[in-house]
Image 1 (cartoon, rainbow, N blue to C red):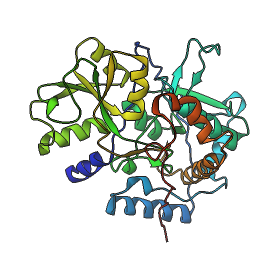
Image 2: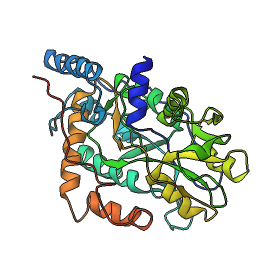
Image 3: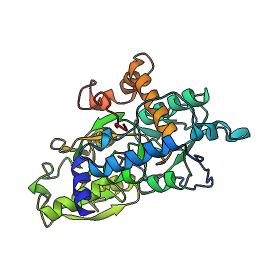
Image 4: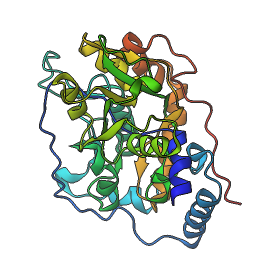
Length: 342
């Protein structure tokens, strides 16, 4: 398990950036919906093959996904057959990550959720249910993403969630929809220069349940991170890391560079320190046995990338270009590669 954790940590971390105010997240999961019925023999074989492949060869977890398909299976039919007002896609998201999933009080939209991840959710709902607004959003903290999927509280999570080796043992992921890398965020006045020896004696904040923490733990054990670096400050949600940084209770935050850039744009007293030191990929997370939903989301992502007018590129231009610049290989994921099951 330790070897797998080390491999996973080197591939990237999950975690989310936060806005500069404390918001109470709604994390009540009242619906326990069975998202898939009995699987066919073929689906069972595919799922078993995927699990075996993932366990044997996890050097590239972002490639451990199923090929695209527009077909409806048991999981999608159950979503479509929900009665009355419940005929919606139930999606776990963030509501505090600026430009990804957040409520802008100045938008004039009554505090509706907006951002890059939210655009993708609307596109998925439009394809599956024919209505981009047929979505029930559930705000969940970082450390509740996988439990929410596994207990059926949500159909999927679209929340800047990194695909890594440990997670693909617990949930299924789509192909990557975004590429980023981990960076250090600290006050501009800080002597910290990046993910290096200047972190000696410093207090680093990460979110519990994120791969950020497991990577810090592994790097400290291996000697890559100074032994005197304090990594004990973990919080349920990355939002709290920014607050701790602002209050002087932490010296630095380690999180995805794409999210940290938006955070720095919100708070002019902090900045990114050093270059990104990992490569990681965000994916849509779903139940392990929801093969038809995984395949459908992968097909949606293929079409979303091709749609230059109202797809991935347009959403990037609207939400992320101001903080990340023009689209480049640093953010746009490579062409997807799918798991071979035969």
